[in-house]
Image (tube, rainbow, N blue to C red; front, side, top):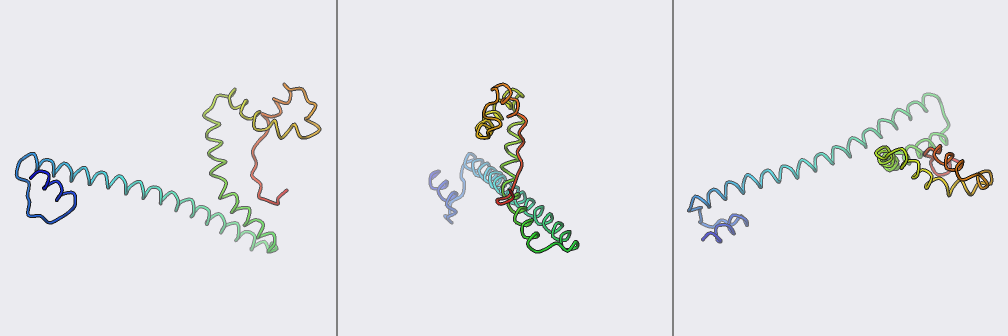
Length: 156
């Protein structure tokens, strides 16, 4: 009977079964409370994620609206307005990656940050004739001075 009761409880079937023993009643109460808490936690996480997405989207819309109003009030040409709008879209899409990279770098020690920056920037700098013949120690210092700047495609 305990198996039949548990099956009826889990499937939601309307079997004329009731908990007969105190242990079955306790199990029913505990599972109901646990199920309620688990569902509440799952729903709250979904709400938090949706709120974060909505907040990012509303910030983006507010920024673009303010910049569009600024450009229209100053009589800027449509071509320039389009370029600005495309840049803002690109920035919005890639800012999370840039922000995550910055957070990761700030968690590291200064020596590790220097090594990572050197690794990321050295190959780019060595292709330029000015830096190609530079001493390794000096090139290492120059690599640490590099900063990430976000450009939209076609800006340069």
